[in-house]
Length: 466
Image (spheres, rainbow, N blue to C red):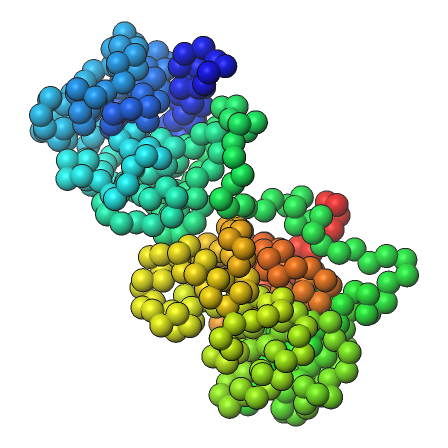
């Protein structure tokens, strides 16, 4: 800010914000727009954007939460452009403001920015409710008002946006659930902050990142150089879990999969994946470079899980394997619980885990000295050293039985190639999400087998992007 003319950053933000609003309106001319304006720069962004829309033929009204704290230059520009203030000095939600919101094609939420904490106050909450119930589109300025910017939690009343226009850099609250659920579609506006930003608190992979992570076989590669995965999975009750996990590993790039499990399960695995090598005991498995443990394991397998953990090899622990964790893990480990499993591991309520996903996944990573991949509508991957990644791919269609088993095999295969658990978990979640999206395009609500069938094409596309 010290190197730019006064308000230059706000003008960049307002220009980007107005452009997005104009696009979602299908052109601003003749449309009705209402601004919900808080104090400070977030409200200033809304007022300047409102002025730009008014200049382009929109009818723009403003509801000021605090007339005494409004951004003065933004308000002056808004009035010069023909904008109207329709709120009284004492009560933001009046019959006139209610009518304006009900007629609006678009409501622009500029009540709270990244400094907001603890949800909306009563007057702002009533405006948010009116916008949700009566208006057309709701567009949030930088992030929906009332969400917790740094923890992605919903601790009180908040705006539910159709579109969020964020500036400078992404905020955790618009990437991670539960707050991301109320952000809608996210549009990023670059206002030139990148050279001045500190290290991020969280990362989000893009296709080129994943492509560069994936190992590519070299001229002298063999199955051991590609990675051999030991797979302890399946039981008489959950035979399909072993088949899906083995498929995730085989299609995910493992040079060999060595399966350990009951004979009747091994038979089904071999029927689907004849390239898999089977044995009945962990001690007789042969050479492996990493393990994946837990998919469909059932009860009574604690000794086998312990035997795998005692090898000291990199290990992925999923599903029933998570019931048999030691106090801490010494080697390279990746744990892949869903919210219910993490709640049991942490002796917590599932609802509390869902409400505080970031807090719990970080606590679990520290507790077990392991990378933890928390599955869900937005998958979080936390390393014990504090690093966080938010997975941007996926679809609600992945909420199907066996989907996690495919992910387990895929992530295990990446571990076997030598990838660190943090990268293996992050890349596997990304690839699995793309496969889910591809499968959903074909059938709407795909099975886990359909997700597995989509893996080769997804991986081929990523490899070709290297």
